[in-house]
Length: 70
Picture 1 (cartoon, helix red, strand yellow):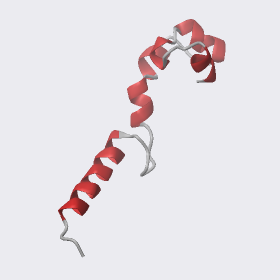
Picture 2 (cartoon, one colour; picture 1 turned 45 degrees about the vertical axis):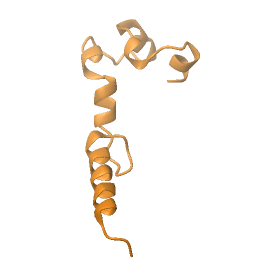
Picture 3 (spheres, one colour; picture 1 turned 90 degrees about the vertical axis):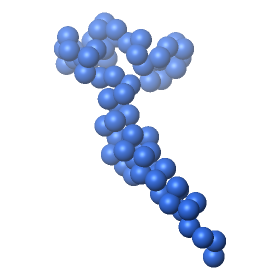
């Protein structure tokens, strides 16, 4: 990520060569396997940006807003 930020590039711009430069363990399937969406979805903490965590937080706030004051 530091390299991408320094080069003003986005995660999705990584090429097969970029991945292989980071590790020779990355195979040809890396471009279809590691995506920004997969990265966000894989997060499992309650306060993360994973879609399920965001939906749960939004539901909690909506419930809170619907409660009577006091």
